[in-house]
Length: 121
Image (cartoon, rainbow, N blue to C red):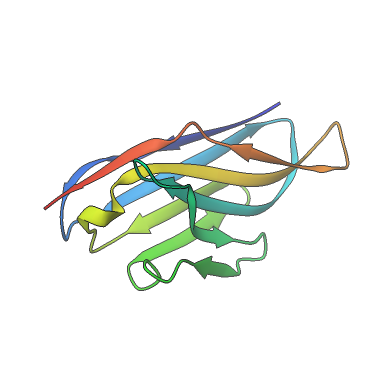
């Protein structure tokens, strides 16, 4: 079994910064893509940023100049640095990982429980 645990959410004023972290643990053989998604009230969950095992990144257009994703493959962690936050960034942020476990050669998708980010105007 694999667990993803997020941390770092909270309340911040518009223009401020937050840093989200996600640590994966359990029966991990390797992790391919790691990503951050978010879901605002009444809206669908959307991709915020993703990073491959080799370090290639992709961002949603509305965050690419403000957010930065990084990972530490040795520690199985992924981080999202969020700067110049706006009220519209308010959402529950979820960590996602494509994981190959030690018990199966197949890749499975895992999600964290989510962390709330609230940006006040």
